[in-house]
Image (cartoon, rainbow, N blue to C red; front, side, top):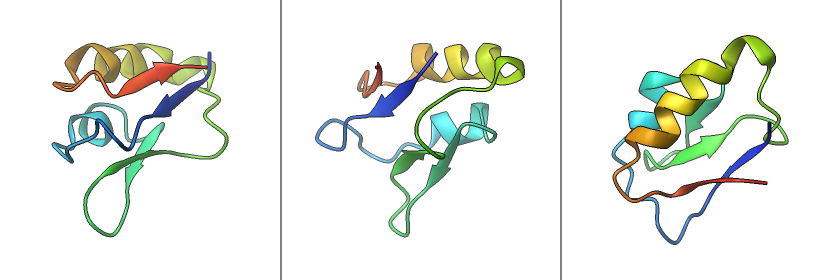
Length: 63
């Protein structure tokens, strides 16, 4: 599973990095970023799916 955050849609609510801190982080302005190349470690798939489903802008997309 690989993910990306669309910077055009992300509004910086922070739910992604609150729910899945092993997959997402925040930039200097508080907008979400995927850690690394977007590959989700197997043990982080459940929190990543929670983050995807809880993003109000639906800014997290599969690759």
